[in-house]
Image (cartoon, rainbow, N blue to C red; front, side, top):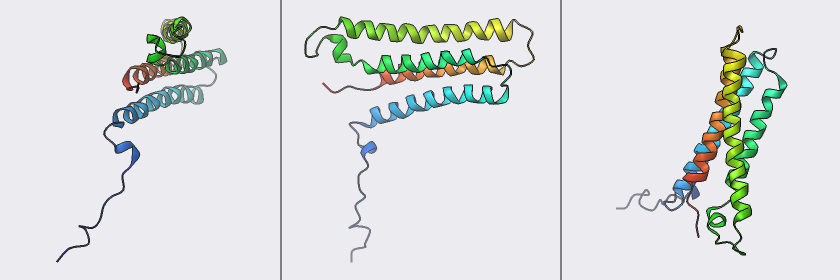
Length: 152
C-alpha cells in the first residue's frame, strides 16, 4: 500500500539550486546591508530633522553611486577578457568607484566627529546614523563585488 506522500514531488525553487545559491545569498545580504544603511539615515532625519543638514544626504547619494560603479564592472573586464581587450577604462571606472566609496566613509566619519562628537550638540544620533549609512552601503558594495561568483 503506497501513501500519497510517495508521489509528492516538491517543485524546485530557483534560489535553492546549489550552483547559484551563493550568488543569491550574497545578493540578498548586500541588498539588506544597503537597505539598512539607508534606513539609518531616514530614521536620523525623521527623528531630528532640525539637526540634519540637507547637504549630509549627498554622502548617501555618492555612496549609492559608488555601489553602482563598483558593481557594474565585471572581473572579466578587469582581466581584459572582454571583446576588445582594453581594460584601462574599466579599471579606472572601478578605481573611481572605490575612491568615491572610501571618500564617503571618511567624510561621514569627519562629519560625525567634527559636527556631533566634538561640538556640544544635544543629540549625537544624526551623526552616528550618517556614519552607519555610509559604512553599511560600502560594506554592502564590497560584499556584492567580492562575494558573487561570475560565470566565464
